[in-house]
Length: 86
Image: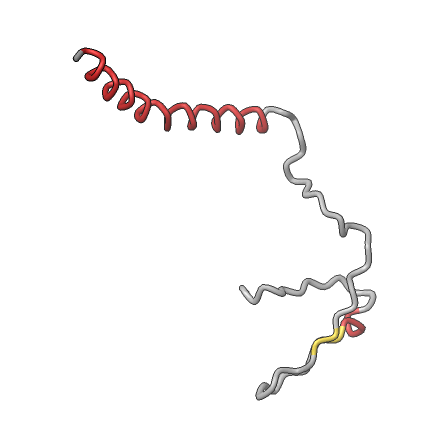
């Protein structure tokens, strides 16, 4: 009978300790990244230094707005929000 009562107590202890172990592992990972000395403001991108792709979008039906032609922005710094979140 003693082995039957130890198993639930052991599994209960594991259930309690598992989130703590996961938290400690993640905290250790984050701490090593913070202390690595890397410049976190630098965002790597495969598109840096390359021209923007040609984008020609027609006007929307029922809207009194022109379409988008990337030639309009040639030679200018432009940010186009393609996610429509703004």
